Image (cartoon, rainbow, N blue to C red):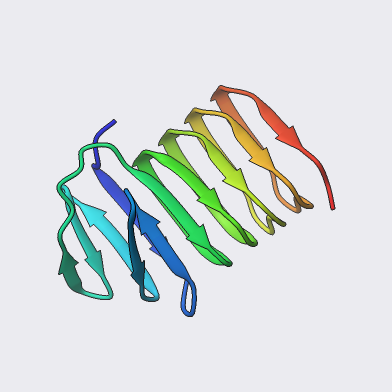
Length: 122
């Protein structure tokens, strides 16, 4: 997996860990292998991406990478990568190739073309 394009919005007051490096900010973007937190570039040499969000998030969109969210999420989209959400989803979760695991209630839809969906509603 390579870091192509990723955007994370609505994380104010929470932490985002990308490949073991913890960042804080309200918007995190990865574009052309550059990590940008609230408009400031942060060093990111990794080609594989693992995103871990402690707390709630509005939107996560990535072309490639594993996404783990401990809190609630409004919308998560990934082309290739597993998605794990620790609480509720108020919108949709979509992945083309990856498993989806939601541990709370789902108000929207969960879709994957090549992967499994598991839930345990709260």
